Image 1 (tube, helix red, strand yellow):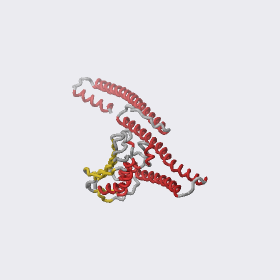
Image 2 (tube, one colour):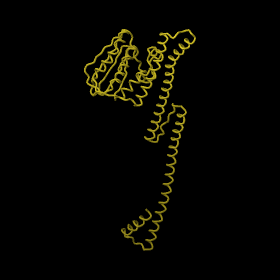
Image 3 (cartoon, one colour):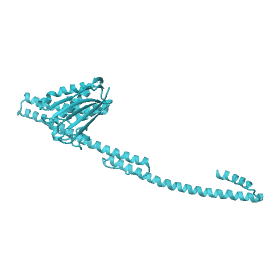
Image 4 (cartoon, helix red, strand yellow):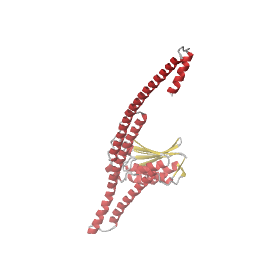
Length: 336
């Protein structure tokens, strides 16, 4: 394009400048200009192509190395080495975001695998105890050491009920986390839900010598499945009882905060260390494994509570000042 347009523009400039050369000289000057223009364009084109190839090769090599690092890291992660991370290649925001997202994925997979292993180990332990009890009693009956009397039947039934409760808990939390729960929601009085859950637990509290206090002023209504929310509140109240010694107290409260209804179950019991608070809603997680198994918890109750509250569009939180200073579990649900 420059070779076609340039000479005509050059000829016009010569005429405007009052060129006094002969026609032959003018033609020679124009041919010289066209030739010089063509040579310079050719040289510039070669230089531009060479520079483009060099820059393209440089960046393609850097991109290729980055892709190779990602592919190598993917291979290591596929082999189970979830601690593999990808460094920022320094190629811009997009590649930095890709590296950061990949590292977050690796961390999440590592956390998931750790949880899975712990869950399987805890599940095996939970099943081992009742199964060992059943097996021992059946073997004793076969050997004639024990008879199939009411005491033996009670022990066997208790073990089978524990296994059934474990299976139901696992099924409940799986359905809740997968979003397969069927909620039969109704407009309910918020304070009445907490009062019902507290009244159902009073006998158990009295038998253990723990005071159950309630602070339930009118808090409006909530559009919830009363059975599911009742299950959550009952779980929190029973959990507080398990971890509060005789002579302690548990307070169940309900209040309206803006567009939310907030339930709180606060106790004066064992408390929770700061490093355990982020994990108390994980499946099978126990702050004190031996103590919680002695208390009879399956380690799934709080995970179920979190899933059920999430299905209602709310949230659940745990706070504690530390071991020996009690703990509080707070549930927030959208107000009706």
